Length: 219
Length: 141
Image (tube, rainbow over all chains, first blue to last red; front, side):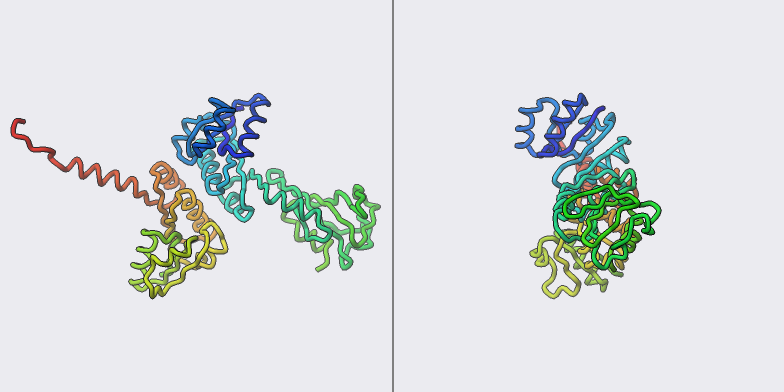
């Protein structure tokens, strides 16, 4: 595959090394002169200088024949523009963008960039996952599959407390995966009985999240 | 009409002043609180301090009810994203966006944005001015 990476920070440079080792043809575009000089020592001709939101820079980097464009700069606006232009103007079949500020996620969705990665959102979810009491947390968001894996606690007021999994009236497009009690996790089956304080993991389509909350979490 | 201006530099503040003088209801957004100094001391409109990409800031500036929106921060990419938010997420009927790069301006025009490219305008005006001069009038030609 020919892969164009925009943004040569920690993510972009590590991605470049990894993809090259996998045998892909890679071009990395970096706009900062000093950083470009450092990257050039390591990657030589693979890295090119320039602002990849300038169309001629993208063209010279071979955007027209790219199978994949990955935008991982520290600027969400730039990542949006690079991906949108690559997709809409140059017909690149697949684009992936980094979301720096999770509050900007809706803007990526708005312009149809469906594959996004947000380190901040992932770290937040993992930390929330470590806290004893928390709201429903999305651990993994599989956008393309339209599925998410969530975790939440069964509170003492939960309508599900004391019930067996088979007795629950769960939304159709959802399944419980596991139940963690006193630090020990078990796969959820019909005979699993839920108790207050249990941490439950579930897989579901995002639009039934509210329905699942109603069934399992106290109002 | 209700007008929202994102970016209170020379262009944004001048449009704000003119439209406000003409009796329109104008609010202005800028991420630099000092930008308020560019507006008249007795500025009758609203000034919201914040980044135009922040949906809450746009809502506070009245994007939900604005009849028109002018986007003129100092970043092309920022402007293009804000303009699309105003159009697609808030259904603003008229969104005019400054884009300094002629290539990006032309492309986003094809996607339906109404862009203004001062660079292209300058190129045209300066080229026209050059071509309109007869050059040095020398006797021996």
